[in-house]
Length: 355
Image 1 (tube, rainbow, N blue to C red):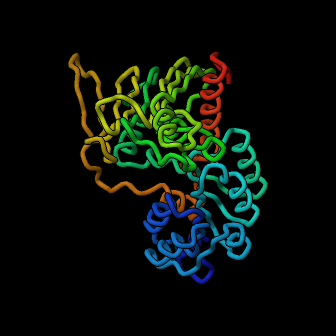
Image 2: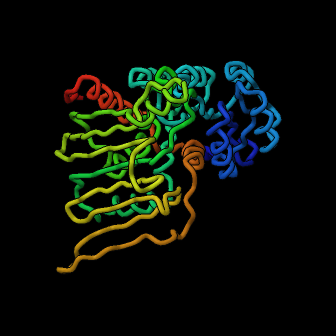
Image 3: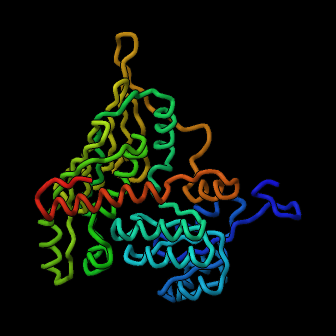
């Protein structure tokens, strides 16, 4: 019998619960792209936001305690959309309650917590996916199709960045508090561009990292406002892989640049190079390929795909329903987490970190 059909012949529906209704709103919308998914309950400690989102999306079952929701309800999948500090404990609780987990990026506060999450998933026989959402855009998917076709040959160098001129979260909040977030723009923004580059490169094995962090702009502004802030406002790193390839990673909330928001991932291959970038300093993306054919240099530009790109939630649901591998696995999330840890450690020690 097919894995997506009930015993009575009707299509099975996955029951999904959402914890955290900040970015959790986008999870609700993403899950609803799949016709065999129903978001049946939501949880948020902010009762006002809980009711507002519940009314907006017509979700009647609401909890101010995630732990109580997991104890009372039975879910096929739980989306965890809380501050980073709570990813590990809630993921483990969801696994123990018998659910698969979709966890917001970053996977956790550090790689040690990530390993604990993977171990809990294995014990429970459940899946763990990390919401690396930037690989699910039409531009990213289009490039990945060309990568898998062999168009680029072997990637040997890349640069992946997300810079903001002044795009700091509100001072005094959890994003700027290391005990709740684990870090600043590197773990918030850079994590997306790092995953995108690694995914396109085929997730090569990293061998060492050299990195540094800075805080000259945000620290001054936070001090002037009398607000707490103890993370970086810019981070940069150089990563070397076992196959000899290298990757530069940059991320900032505050930098004296022209653009309000700059996202670019460039990869150079032995046959061709690629560029995925944001358009008009916003959140629409473009894809380009640069190559040489028959003695002439050619540029190719991705136009609208024949089918619209679906969310990561849609793809995760489809993988669960059809019992096939899912994207953005917990194992890939752990590689990213180990690299983030290494960049922060290199910044602290002033020396390269071997992996």
